[in-house]
Image (cartoon, rainbow, N blue to C red; front, side):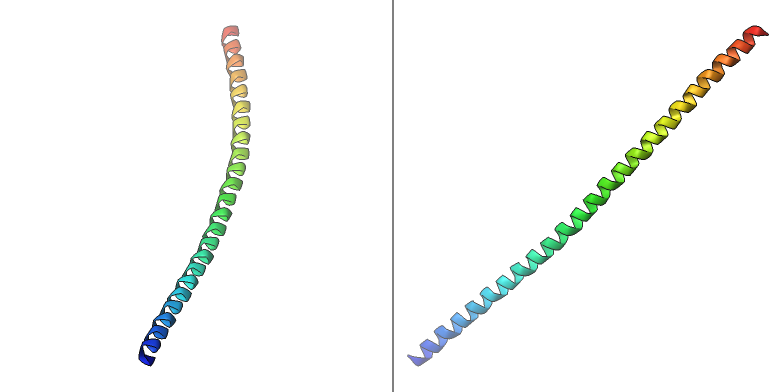
Length: 86
């Protein structure tokens, strides 16, 4: 009888240890998940900031390109006028 009780207690002890290990594993997974989420959020913010910066640069380039196109149009008209005068 005493041996059965010891065996039962041993099984219960093993089960409790298994449960503790599983809980510790789940806690580790939760910590890893939190780290990954933080890392991803930081990277998404960086991408968004970079997109905003790139958008500003693109706007400046388009503005500059428009000014250059206007100057080319003006020069073409002046050149055409000079050719007609000759």
